[in-house]
Amino acid sequence: MSLKDNHLRVLTYNIHKGFNVGNRRFVLHQIREALIAADADLLFLQEMQGEHVHREKNIPDWPDRTQFEFIAEGVWPYYAYGKNAIYSAGHHGNAILSKYPFESYENINVSPFPWASRSLLHGVVRLKADIQPLHIVCIHFGLTGKERRLQVAKLCERIDEHVPHDAPLIVAGDFNDWLGQAERYFYEHLELREVFRTTHGRYARTFPAWLPILPMDRIYFRGLVPVSCERLAHAPWHVLSDHSPLAATFEI
Picture (cartoon, rainbow, N blue to C red):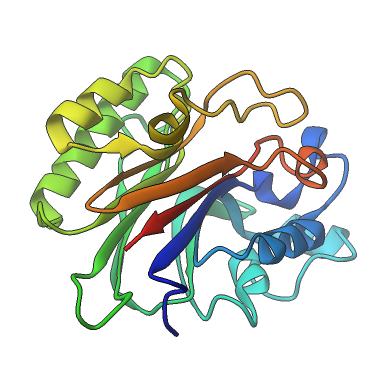
C-alpha cells in the first residue's frame, strides 16, 4: 500500500469500550462504521475492550472476536494491542490499527500505583522503503496530576532511549491533561508539538462529546509536516463515545 500523495492521515479516539455515554447502548458497530468512513491510515484507540466474559454472554451483538480485530477486519490489516487494566472479567487497553506493517511493538507499564493501571503502546511502522520507519505511541494517562507527571516522565524516558532523534514520531491518545501541563515538558524535552494547537492556535476540546469543553485528546508529532487537524464533532460522533475523535493529516 502506498501513501496518498505522500500524506498520512491519523486518528485518535477513546472508544469507551464500545458503549455510548452512560453505558446505555452498545455502539461498537456504529463506531466501526464511523471509523471506516473517516478513512485514517493509523488509528490510536483507547479503552479498547480486549475481553469481558460477562458482556460477551449478555450483549446480543457483541462481536465473536476482540474489539480491535472486529474494527480492523478488512480495512486495517495490521494491529497491536496492549493491556492497560486487567480484572477478573477481562481486560481493556490501548490499540493501534494500521494500514502499514509493524516492524515491532511493545506495551510498557507506566502505572505509578497498583490501583491505577496504565500503559503506553509503542510501535514502529514502515510507511515507505526509502524513509525512516515511523514511531507511534498510543497512550491513556491517569486522572490525577501526580499520576500524569510520573507517566509523562516515563514516556519521555522511553522516547529518549528508543526513538532516534531524527526519526518521525507521533504520540497520540487521551492525555487527561485538561490544564495543558504536559505541553511545555514535551516541547522543551522532546521537541514535540501538538497538531491541533499548531494548526488552530489552541487545543481541541474533545470531552464530553455532546458538549466539548475539556481538551483531553491530543496528537503530538515531530519529524513530520502538519497539513490539517479537525475535531470530529458532527453526527454520528456526538452520540457514540463520551470523547470526540481528533483526525490529523501529515505530509511525509
